[in-house]
Length: 337
Image (cartoon, rainbow, N blue to C red; front, side):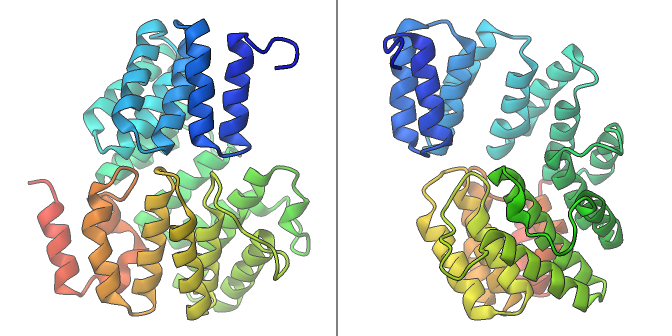
């Protein structure tokens, strides 16, 4: 900005900084729209503007910018992945999501991102066999954390908890047991691995390995909140909700519920708030507060970036509600004929 304050490229960089560092979404939108006056035909700019607009809950405006970006650069595989793998999946517009990902794979058949995004889309639809086939197209040695997330999710949906444990443990192998995760320089990696430890703990608990589960939950808490006075603020990767799940895994009801409620209250991001609400409902279910958990589900089935019927059907975190007639009715009434 000091060298060229009026350049569109400078304003794009400012928008990225406001979005990704300051998490000032409205400030980022203003910077991108100012850049747009100078670079009206930049697909890259339009894509980034659309990504921020999602965070503010302006889904229709975001879609218009994504579409304009695709008109300008219809062969941008990264853009097609953003549209198909996340945006339309968040809106549960699965046909449009598939069309974008099909186009990405037509252009780049070996795109790992497109294959994992298609797997995630198929999981959202409850098409688990096809999702597994899609994940099998990705090299087994892939260390991408995004791939890890969907492989673990697939194994959990299929109730293959030992498989999920193996996937996570392979990812954690380079990390000595006594080494705190905050030795990683990247915050994203720290939170992602903290998330992996939480899911590792639950899978260990579900197969009866309680001592190991306790250790995994404890390590996750140490990673995300290494000191009692550490402030775990909302961010792009859901650390407050992950911390709440770790407390829940240890059976610390009050801390888990308070942390989950705080995560919902503090989150203003339209993409991250629904997952925080999901975590709160699942923790409520885990501790027997079924009325509150069930009451949250209709909203979560409708709001963008919430849950799908497949999630209700297959996610083991909803198991405490499975025998409740109200939960069964919600699943049945929401399942496509």
